[in-house]
Image 1 (cartoon, rainbow, N blue to C red):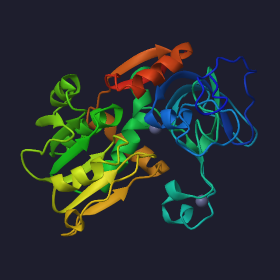
Image 2: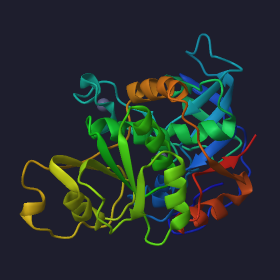
Image 3: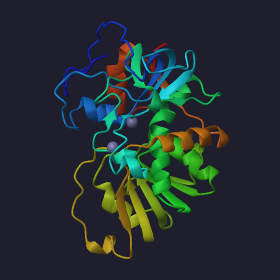
Length: 325
Ligand SMILES: [Zn+2]
Ligand SMILES: [Zn+2]
């Protein structure tokens, strides 16, 4: 399923099975998660790269073969491919454990063709083994929703009272991890979305309400998964002195002006960008130990546009995943 240019529907296309280049693996795709970032790419909310791309950066696939330079490709192994598809390895960010900030980084399903396809290529250094015990469909959302959620939770510090704004694919995983760590979670959804609020409570949130509601007590940190800039001052108002507001998305609407008093007392607003391979290794080791489950709504590959439309309308329960293989 190819995006010819932003603002147009994906188009079903037939292509030759690609041939892995040096250091690459050829994967037969089993499943691919659908992420809000895919929607930002399709809707033209990220810079247009001026050429067609296959979206999808939560790929679960079986290794079919390796390219030159891959002496022992793990043929037959089930691996996951995340958003971070390549980094330079030489810049000061790459050399200081911050490859997520590499200026040359290439991202799967954006710079590199992704997993809304039957086959995909991936740099073998950026593939993760998938923990046993997760089906292909259930594993897919771990690769971005789970991973970015994990990085965001780390950036929130050890906050015992955590707010989650936007209860979609990422939050439904993070709530479980936060509760596993002994935190108390407060979930904020679109006003009137009783289904999402009940879903949040069922996964361990002790309170769930509308995004404009004040929580029953102050929070120590909040993570914004909803791409709505107006929630930044709302979340700042909800956090205690010294609290942190983490913006987890790659794109957000403009943040409205707000009084300095909301930031005063050492409150912090920060973003989280991409992921490092270390995040992936840590999170995928943690997921089975914390018994994280993912709730998925699956679509056939040919219904990728429908999956994106449902995500855009906020109608996906848990995470949307394309069932491919
Ligand atoms: Zn770099
Ligand atoms: Zn994503």
